[in-house]
Image (cartoon, rainbow over all chains, first blue to last red):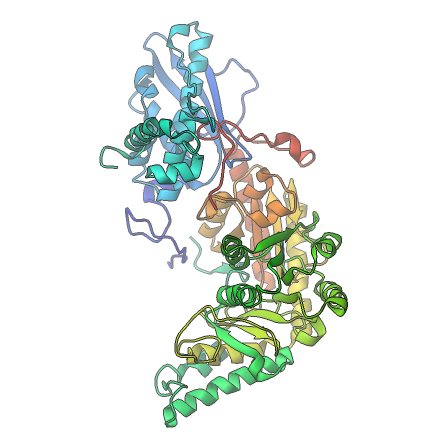
Amino acid sequence: MKKTNLDVVNKFTGGNWAYTKEVKEHFFNPRNLLWEIPQNKFEFDAEGIVGSPACGDVMRVWLKVDQKKDKIIEFKWRTFGCASAIAATSMLSVMTTEKGGMKIDKALKIKPQDIMKRLGGLPDRKIHCSVLGDKALRAAINDWFKKTAQYERIIVESSRVIDQNTKVTEADIESAVIEGVKTIEDLQKRTKVGIGNPACLDEAEQLLRFYREKYFGKDA
Amino acid sequence: MSDKQYYFDYAATTPLDKRVFSKMKSYFTENFGNPSNLYEAGRKAKSAVSEAILKITKVLVCRPDEFIFTSGATEADNLAIAGVARANKEFGNKIIISAVEHKGIMSVCAALAKEGFEIVKIPVNKFGMVDLKKLKKEINVKTILISITYADSETGTIQPIKKISSLIKKFRKNKGTFPYFHIDVSQAVSYFDINVKNLGVDLMTLSAHKIYGPKGIGGLYIKKGIKIKPIIFGGGQQSLRSGTQNVPAIVGFGEAMALAQENKKPEFNRIKKLRDKLEKGIFKTIPKIVLNGHPKNHLPNFLNISILDIEGEALLLYLDEKGIAVGTGSACNSENLEPSYIISALGRPYEHIHGSMRFTLGKYTKDVDINYVLKNLPQMVKKLRQISPLNLKIKNPKKISQPKAFVGGKTPRFVK
């Protein structure tokens, strides 16, 4: 059997398919996919959706929760996106439901790099495709909190303005990091942060370091 | 994984014709000489280069000294634009291009903008054709160069080159030698007449690997008398373009060019028929498809469609698993995550671009290949649509374009 010549080599595996074996497996045989949208809207306990078709990624997540144990017992999903996005959602569904399900507090702490680790890595420029999975999960969990009146547990993902002049937000810096920005110079090129208001550059640089560490680990 | 390869990406590159390869072989080993040298090996190489030039210029219907070899179409485009701009800046600083040019044009123009040149991009209509009225309005005494592709590399829509050249000639009648007119015919050589006089152009870019020749070789036609500066400096081989000539590739290019003239008309018709069958078949068996580009006025081997609700890279990889190779304009398949600017220029929303697929046929495409795609594509699309949470409407695309909740909750910005 001959392999196609995709001109992408995975730097983690050296393989000539752009993705790892795990990504490929989850991409071609997605787990826990919701085949039919349920007619009964109470069939699932909670639902979350993030992304937009214009940006090329949309993830929708449906959950069943064991309220007594505070555990996710079922995670169904649908994803519009590339191979990384599809495989990442599939893997996330496995992670949250294996071994009898995952505690909600633990699920809230899942980070993109936890999913990536389980997938055996993704090519650098594909990392951003996997970051919507945990966001979709958190959106669904928030929905669950609302439905069960656990308002104190709802996590609001607000976005703070860092540069009043150019209105660059913390979320802008986070997304720049996800897209691969490593230095404050590149961050400014990307977001215009601090161009008219250099006083905010210190804080921007701190956030840059914080998110580098969050998404790419301590060695980043 | 399929053993047989079903190749539908001839616009990306073509396989080397075996007849071309056999002509090239001896110039790697026994006839290895440098054409700049006077002894026999050098003379042999030099005459091989001259022969190749004659084969090419015979098709262009120009003088042999009006053509030079480059490392490919990108270098030829760069030389045409930057070389002409820098040599003629005392006469003006305005360069006009279209919104659907190849990156080889776009990028050099972006660089020239930083040198103080004014770059104007003429928009295209919904079929991808350059707006002639806007073009005419933009031409003024400061305009030194106009560069328009013969047919864009994603939808294959053909531009009205002859109309543009007569527009330019009319302007020159009163105002002198400018603007010069450059076109890129990389994708068109196998199917259309590229006689420079019929087309009325001053500079023209060619590429070998799109016509079953080797990669790493292309060339530029430069009409006698055009003022142009080199962009590569060295020993002055080919005067304008330094660097030892790539003799085997040049020989291959010449041969490929000659072969491209054989059976031109019947081959055009054969490929067009196959392409039309593919288009009809896809539209018949798969719902929610949008055609990108001009419905009639396109290269005979191009079919670009948007398949709604699914993402191009995902489909590309599903098709790859079946041995089918296609191209996509999806952001996920590009280096800088920018979705195809060419399809974007047609006014299509991002949702459509992410699901755009380009099928390009070539001389080794057979009826069975089309049947194979028509058999496999519907089920791949069906499966990916089952995975997708979207259900976009074909009409009213503006309404669904609300870029939000992307990473960071912002509309994506693309670093150019």
